[in-house]
Length: 366
Image (cartoon, rainbow, N blue to C red):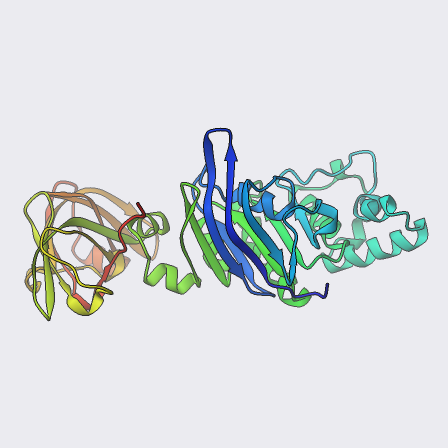
C-alpha cells in the first residue's frame, strides 16, 4: 500500500457486554488530513482510535485503509502506528534504541536500525540527546521520542491518544505547532484524540465531535465553530448561546418560537432545511461575541438578563447572565467597551442580536 491512503469507518460499532461504547459510526478521513476526534470523557473517541489501530476489536462494521479492509488485521499489519498517552518508553534503553526497537523486532541489523533511528530523532529535533535515557528527559522531550518511535515504522496513518495532555500550557502550544509541521512535511494522516476544543481548532483540517458513542458533527474547524450542527456541539465548542423552545408560528419570512419562560424569539425561515410546524421543538444558537448591549433589539432578537458572573479574560470580558426560560446566557465584550461602562453582578442588562446571527440547530438523534 502506498502512502497517503484514505481511512474509512463503515457502520462501526463497539460493545462491551451490554454497554455500547461506539454506536454505528461512519466516517471518511481523506489522505493527508489532520483529523481530531473531540469530545468529553466517555464519548467513544479513544475506543474509536484503538479500533483503527487494531488494539480493540470491532463488534460490527468495517475499517478500510485505502482499498484494503483492515478490520481483522493485527496492529503491525495495518499500515498505522500509535503514539500512546503514557509514551511507554523503555527506561533501560537509550533514546536511539527506544526509537529503533520495532526495527530490532523485525530483525534489522544494529547499525542500520540505529542510523534510521537517528534520522527520526533529527526529524523531531532530538538527535542531540540520542545517548540519554528517558528519565533524563523532560515530558516534552519524551513526547518527541515517542513520536519518532511511532514514525520509524513509516506508517500511512499516525494515531495519537491525547498526546499533549501531560504538557504545561506553554509547551502544549509549542508541541502542537511541531505536530502540524511534521504532518504537513510527511504528508500522511494524523488522527488525534483530544478533549480540548482549542487544540482541535488549532491543529485539525477535520474536527469530529463525538458524544455518547456517536458522531454529532464532522467538518472543518471553521464550519464546526460557525455552524454547529446540534445543541451539544454548540455548547461543547463554547462561545455559543443555545435557546430551546417550541415553534409558535411560521410564515415565509420567519419562524417564531417560545422558550419555557414565555420569551419569544424569531428565526429567519431561510435557516430551515425542511418545513416545520407549530408545536415542533426548536433550538437556535447565537455566538456570544455577536450579542450586543442595546435597548433597540428587533422583535424576537433580544432579551434582558441578570448578570450572574463577570470574568476578565484580557482582551475581552465574559458576562454570564440568567433570564426566564434560559438556563444560561453568555456575552463577550471587548475590554474597552466593558470598562467604559462597567457592570456589576445583579444588574439587569438589555441584550440584542441580529436575525443574521441566528443559526438553527439540528434536533438530537433519536
